[in-house]
Image (cartoon, rainbow, N blue to C red; front, top):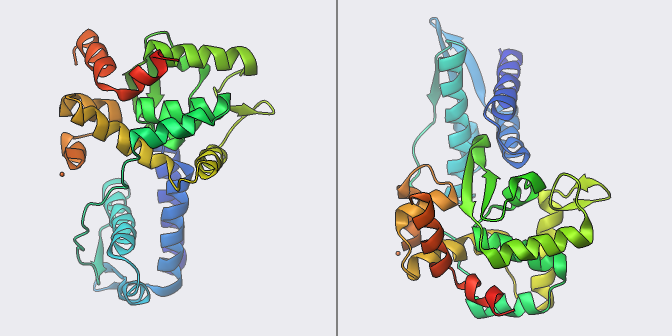
Length: 281
């Protein structure tokens, strides 16, 4: 039975990666959970019904945070749903219960601190920070950004699940991109090293290093939070911010509060603080 479970779990991982377009980091997270399942849980058939008892996994993770446990349970539930919908196999979970996780977000980085870091950044570091903050990108979206995705007024972003969205591009930020391209001559991806696209980890390292030089501990996702928070504080509509972030629902965006195309472009340019900083340079 456990060998069958292993095969089904591997099939689910393949489905997530190749069909749903999950990022490699998400696949690793799911795989780690499934390795725990294989090592400790009980998978058996009784009276023509299939059961997966995850009680041992719950006990092994008793000292972990609610958020960590919730992520693991979510991965397992997704697998159960996949088996029912795609393999027509119904599996009953034992030891499963919902965990209410408080919604938390990293604190936004103050605008004056972002300016400090921009002032000590080299051309590449400057562009990395400006794109993360100016467009509210995830670091994985920045790593997958291609030169052909960028036009003078819009930028096409490929987000979670291979869903694409268009974000208005400030003229000043577009000029910074063109200056960088003139110096670096990227072939396919905007950020490349030795002709190969830079990974999320490499970009995260550059980000962390420049902030560390300024004496600031920060993560790339904090700039995404700063992007959303600053736009809302400066009068942007929550529906527009939700669309810019690539959220499936405004419910995901509402936590940041605690476009026909032309109108969206104008409101975005007026609301984003980076517009004024870059225009002055």
